[in-house]
Length: 331
Length: 298
Image (cartoon, rainbow over all chains, first blue to last red):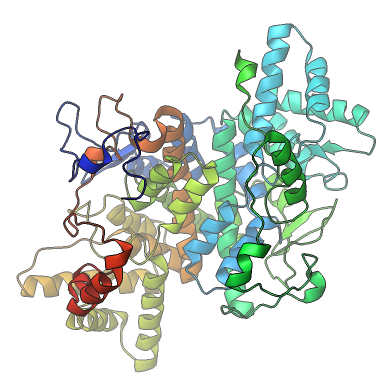
């Protein structure tokens, strides 16, 4: 049948076993193993603490976030600072998370779809807390290892990442004091540490190296503060994306209250927005053999020529080049 | 840098300029610097008002206990999604989207309560009478009474009754708590008459009642409950990402993994020969006419 007799196949396809795989009795049976939490009929326990006992004892959402992610009860000042960060991260006007929530809402979905979708707005440019945290960690480690001052490490971080959306400095907060106020609050509460100190050095270095005026932005202030509170870059990314999703819920409500749902096929795209290939006749299936051109490249040179051509067609994806890990760096 | 809004809308929620971000009239920095908490900010966001201390305390209690629930559909989703190693927000988003008609149906419970309170007002009935009405109507129709029972906490969700008590302790009891208590009483009285076992209030019944009492609309309350769970689902996803194997099928783990081949139990049609293209049309016609496939169609 087809290619299934081909001798290059790794095993005999004609005589493959049927049926499912028998339960594996040589290993422990599957269970939902977790270091984070468990529950039984009468208790819900996170990192060893019963959650009902926690809230009865006066602990709240900020404390439980520390417990879930860091397995520790925070100092009062740390919980206050997390609350401050979460207030500041709750809403950002009609930016990407709100827009995504509202677009999903327009299809007449459940609120949870819209609020959940808003979390997807957090990536490697908007809310790039993972990338930013990795920059801080990378250059702080290099400073320690190579005996550099913070200022030297900051200058290196800026030079190496000058085009990055995740450097934590930009021209976005030149007139808005919110980022500086957050840092001031962290310092006042005594929770500012090496990350805030480094973020400030990065801002100073950037002010020297950038042509246009820049300063610490909300990504920088919030990311550095969260890391001084002990949250990893990944944890920071998640916590702040979820924090914004509450507002995604509010935007869902307002979109339903004020706007109309949209139906399949309703939205038009005016031709003046289109700059793809000009309108052309569809060849008949008989004409296909004469007109269709293969996309297969037989040589690297031919591949390169086709690549350049393909990159001219926006939306093909060939214009995007993403960095992947280079194993030679580890050699 | 282009700073135009992503979507042009008239909005009563917030505005953002180069100088500040303002939510419901309050500058966010001013709010945070004045010492207002995240729970206070949720009142501002959804209700446009600063809450009383007792109200903020109630929300703090609720969000603290809502946050983590170990293995529920939402956490399981986050864990499953991160198995493919997408970006973390994909797993967290999936977790929040898990909430629907069965897992934490907060909005539906809120609408049920609002409807019953309005009926009590319009029909001149007490909330207790309306609670009995509601229970009878749902049970007569064979529908589940929302807010009752939990499949894992079969003796009652450990968070639920303490939430009711806290609701009372903080002096926040109002129409919603009165109606919810009445529903619970009449629900179990009827079950007892029918020789059925006691079923306790769940976290929708207790938590959502408190959120409604605090002034949150059904959807706002739902957002608070479901999104709050997103924090812990993120922790579960992160734990799985950092300390588990991608794919959840590793043979090197001492425990059989979630997606090990041996975890698959197949109960569909028995294995059958693939018809050739020459046989196909006749085969397909016969299969369609006989209709045996309908047993399996979804």
